[in-house]
Image (cartoon, rainbow, N blue to C red; front, top):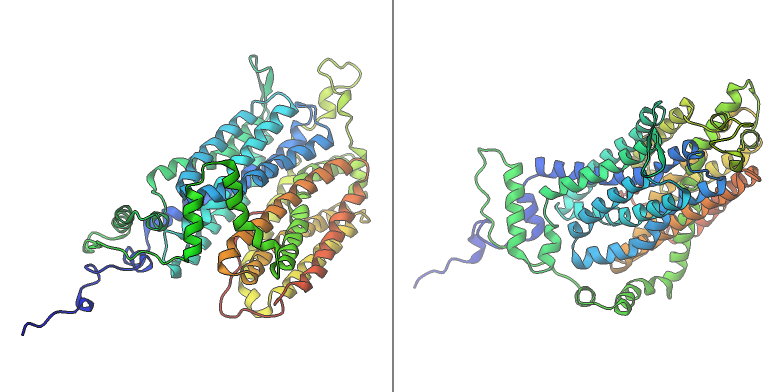
Length: 535
């Protein structure tokens, strides 16, 4: 009788394998490094597009005749664009593809940013910055999924940390790039647009270049193989895996003989919703599908958890992003007073002393020289302290990653919220400018809590609700950025102390609220689930 050879004796290259195993077969090499650099550059582009405007506002004040309230609007409008579109891009990324969303939105972001550098008034700049925020939300919401879906589970965290390192370099470079461009002394007139092209306009374009370069780099990269396999496109997935192996393998390595991949298992309900969403054409149907994914978070036992997480993110972003937008401007005002020989002055008194009535500015003014009222440069201290802040974040995240499993999340949240909130309240009373600036730096460091709260959210919700829970909490965070920027813009020139008291007290309340997070007292010693998030 002939003996049949069982399938288990087939070589790994001749039998179907799981996608996770196939990724391991492609090795970890130059292809993965290229992906990490591109993904990290995209994250840096998000940072430059949203926070770079904070360096522009103090020096664009006279060109665009900006009031402090209008500065608040410009500080928040990119976040408003992100808030309006993040749900949409996440939905399209799940139904149309990750790369299909990331690459075109990066090109559109750069186009919007380039247009914003040529605007002649506040309203045009507001519109173009909103468009930039609307489009940059696409890659910011999708890049983590795209990067992770090119790696086996055991290499996923490694890849994200690599991209985060590139992002960290971008954060450190932001004040250096601003200093090298904005403080230059040149200008020329563009007659057709009726504008004077100054360095701050060039800085806006430079802030958009990482996004443009990332979009061009994506031309060499395919769609997410995991997404393609989920859509039943097995042969395309196999072709990508072979391309990855060719990049990573040396000449002495044998060719990869991979012919079949096992389909990924998926919950039937999730699969039906995804397929229904992909076939949805009407706006009403789109909104219905979005509600099916979001509604459970605001029902039953999840309601309290969702409200708590959203409140914490709202308060954190209100300070870390909203107050940050005026950080260079306030430091520039303090530097003006110190240059004038004032050594002891509170931060708010320096703000009051340097208020400019924008309606007094006129190109033909004879009584008030226009350039004497305007800041054409930022003081070097604004760049120095901004660099220090980014360094604090870089070091702080590394330290938190080492200690969070040992000490737990609650002590970190209470300590950071309490310290930052107390410093925010005390700023209004300190008449030593340098000490007040350091307290301001500590106040802005509350952004550490964003990642810790995200880590809490991951454990509070089941797998089918987890991603949406984080998305919704960050939506409320972006809303906090908008409220914070406008609040500072509205109050700074008239009730400066109140802006710091509100942000400080809000952080103290967040520290108390963190005590109510379910299971917050439990330590997770087996896995560090801190999620990386741009501020």
